[in-house]
Picture (cartoon, rainbow, N blue to C red):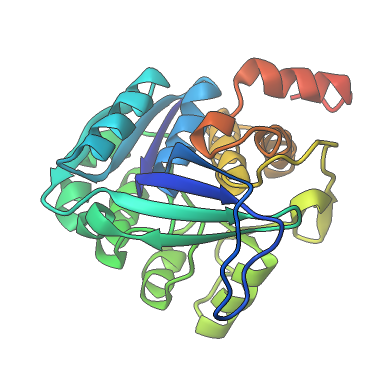
Length: 289
C-alpha cells in the first residue's frame, strides 16, 4: 500500500480548559501540552503506523519547530522527501480542549506556501500511490494540482475539506473519489454548492460512528482524553483500508476503530494508532478487518 498526503504540518500548543472563555474573559487553564500536528502530517502518520508506505508533501519553516516536526515524522516512518523548507515560519495550531469539545485556531505560516510547484515536484510519488489524501489547511491551487495528477494516473483522491475554504472546496471536490466530512462541514460544503454526487460521501458522526449512503457504521466504545486528531486518524485509516482494496463500508469500520483509539491519547500525532491496536479492537468486537 502506498498513501500520499498533500497537506499541512503544525506545531500544536494544546490547552485544556473547563470551558471555553467568553468575550473579554480570562480563564486559568488546567494544563498545556506541545505536540506534532497538522492535518496533512497527522494523516500521513496514521497511514504509516497502519502499515502503509506513507509520503508527505508540504512545507515547514527553517526553524527549530519545523526541524522537530520533520524528525518526529521520520521517527513515525513517514517519508519526508517532499517536505520543502519555506522562508515562512512553521505553521502553528492552538487546540482548546474542554470536557465536551475541541476548538482549534491555526496560523498557516509555511503551510500557505504549499502550492502547485510542490505537487509537480511530487508527481512521481502521487502517480505511484494507491490513495492521495487532501485536506483544507493548504492553498487551493496546490491541492487542485495534486488531485489532477492523481486522477490522471488512477490514484484515488480522498478529500477531507477541513477547515472549509470555499475556493479550495470548489477546486478539489469535482476531482474527489471520496469526500469525508462531519455534519458541520457537510452543511458548509452544501452552501458553497459544488456537485458531490460524482463521489462517495462519508459523514463522520463523532461518538456515533459514520454514515455512508444512509448506512450507519457503528462506533467503538472509548474513553475520551483528547479528541484532537480523531478525524485525521479516521481519514488516514480510511485511506489505508481503501488502498488495500476493502469495500467502503468495511473501510469505514476500520477507520472508526482508529478514531476511537485516537481520542484516548493526548495530542494529535501521538494519538495515531498502530495496526496492531486497531486489529485488536476490531477482533474484540468481532467486526473483522
